[in-house]
Image (cartoon, rainbow, N blue to C red; front, side):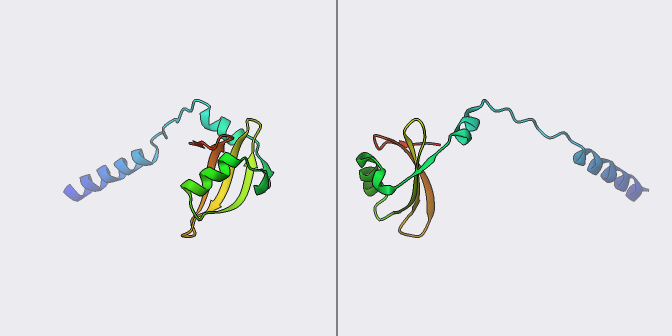
Length: 100
């Protein structure tokens, strides 16, 4: 009898877990703005000198794969570090790193 009660309770409990509502995630539009920014590819030779200097100083030995610029003169840099790790960096025209 105890096994029957336990099995019934377990079955009912598993049904309620499976039908629990998923939480609603609210967002304030910030990430949407980041993803909607349009970047245009630029040549490495077209990068502003402060960005080139910041990259050489802060990411010594990194290889620049691609560079992009948006309408606000913010730059997206695809790099590969000395240890082979690929990364994406964002910087403004003055060579300041941006958190995205």
